[in-house]
Image (cartoon, rainbow, N blue to C red; front, side, top):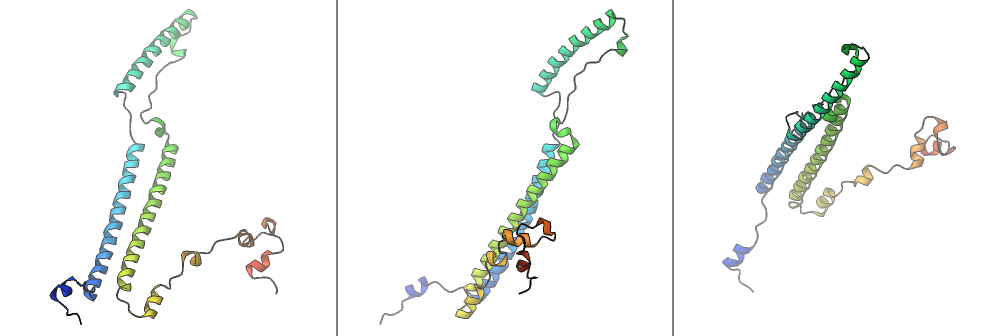
Length: 206
């Protein structure tokens, strides 16, 4: 018989204690809490950045735009002089004549209120959807981590079987067929499958 040595005892992995499992479960919950807070903070930062982009103002002093403005104003000046000469030749008072001017939109396309509101709504909806998806991933990770900790402490087959008894998502939320959808219609004229919907809804006579 092989004699157990000090080296054998030192290299054998010790089983996780109940105290360690409890500490790890608390750590998992804390990590989940911090992760959710980080997601909320990041989502808020994304919304603030989106608002900043929507509200971004272009100024006439910007190099490229300033050059465009100078050229446009020069052309408008020539046009105004031509209009003045035409009005004078026809005896029309200048105040009654056509006006020519350059208009610079400081917010570009986003100056339109409805357009900005639409973009803001789309952006917020997208960020909120991705935040919910991040929450789902955090919850999934937390659940899997805690289940793994619990499973390591189970010894009986019955206990392990119980832990694995959670129904699948397909069983919890079965797919909807066209026939079942048709059966939900409360107006016979909208039904695609006439004469079969009563059985599908369980209201027909057997």
